[in-house]
Amino acid sequence: MASGSRGLFGSQAGENVARAGAAELVGTFVLVLAGGATSVAAATTNPSVYDLFTIVAAFGLALTALVAGLGHVSGCHLNPAVTVGLAVTHRFPWRAVPVYVLAQLAGAVLASLATWAVHSGSGPSVVRASATVPAPGVSSGRAFFIEALITFVLVLVIIAVATDDRAPAAAAPLAVGAALAVCIFIAAPLTGGAVNPARAFGPAVVSGTFSGLWLYLLAPLVGGVVAAVCYDKLLAPAHAPEQAPAE
Image (cartoon, rainbow, N blue to C red; front, side):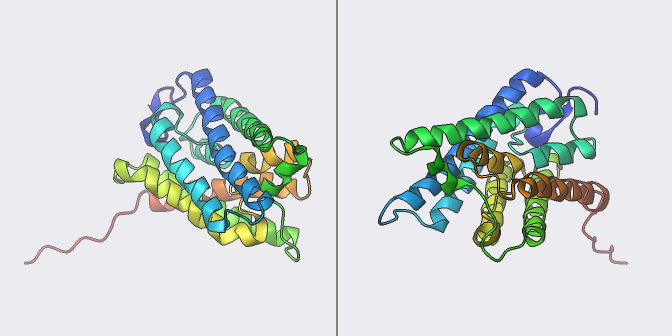
């Protein structure tokens, strides 16, 4: 991909990589803080003031706002699975991948530290309430499949609405935020619904919850790459059937 080519949401992929990386750090920080702090509040208040719907809404609404606000700056990937998937299909320059991924991971760690600070008076273990781990009875293989599957759905929607000129640009933020919400609804009772290696990495590092972390880092990458290739090779060239002209 040549420098300056079109990235997600009309951003210029490869231009001002350092500044774009800063936007990725800030965006991932806000996303993980929104969902993570809400998750901790739901787990630590008695009686609980939040439920699963509120947590899902926090993640979905945060991503909607961030795509609208930062999409034109960095492409608003906020997820290594998105970044790697785009790079594999030549929609994003490989030279910028390390900057984006490191920024996303750093933003998630800072967000988890901020969550700890918000709930001051508790040790860093309080952040464990926002960490993603397989539910009892869910094997690592099953959790891997679930995380790969939901990330496939999310990345497919992102690439479809953010890189294809046929999709209405105004609908992109809402579509992406809704896709994330649906994915978390599907997986939350089983895996916590990370859908994002950075979102899993931050709380794990701060709380010391490393059980199953490898699958939350790897499975979304697999799902994201498969989604990107599927859209690039199969769906992007497709057109709806047209009515044959009347004779």
